[in-house]
Length: 357
Image 1 (cartoon, rainbow, N blue to C red):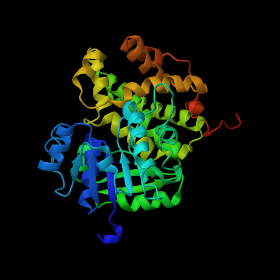
Image 2: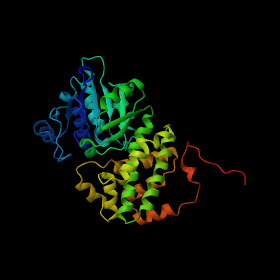
Image 3: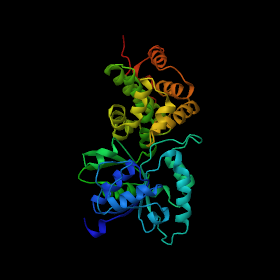
Image 4: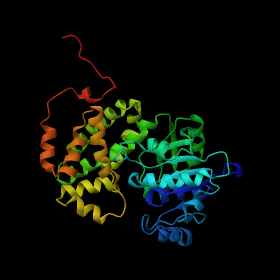
């Protein structure tokens, strides 16, 4: 890598995904520092080149460093990568705004968000939260990374393809070059809303497929949930102005299939344990890493009601998680819904029509 191509990157969030992306960037010659709330995680990355809590057993790039001081992680960086879970994002962004507001460099850094979720109280997407809580960085310098990617596989340099969305073509292509690596193929997209929604709602569907697996239902059931789940994602997305084709790509069906079937999926694991009879409280108490789908379920349920979008699978997940509904009863209700044409719920996508009799 040439000196001109070397980026100074501050990664905000030292969980598994943040660490994996930081490692990937560092191996490509970028100057990378990770900010993490836990000093023990920062010390392990900095001193031993490992993250034993969130990414155990994977050696990290020797050049990668870390800190628990947010201002130090941001100082002198021309790219910021935010990987903070949605429930904790807003206070971190407020702190970041205070830091950037007094920055002497008149050009704000680029910001890439790899967070997948929808805020509970406001029902805002991450891009909307950023616009409100971090005005120091304009939308034209923000991008959103999503697609089928497990942190552990990315950190092991296994071939991965993702989508990077931005309202600015210049920003998208500039950041595409930075995040591309021999094991990471990055596509660009102008559809910020679609890429964000695909990454968020797939976690809800993954809880549903996991629950069906935990109940001992077959592959037919899983395939049906994934396919009809994708229809729900597309219906909500198009109602919010996203492009329908986005949901047929990496940030749509690609991420959905991975999260619904991959053994490393935290949201699928939550569903499986529910299907086996464990309580949600007990499951979450044992998990150190965040399963975004649990909170996102509530956001999606209320967002769909606000927009008048029918999302039966996501609604049943909500009833199970937040109203104590019986899982087998949820499956029965889905199977006994009024019969209709397959394309009827795919709002905005059109579909085949009947010919003359």
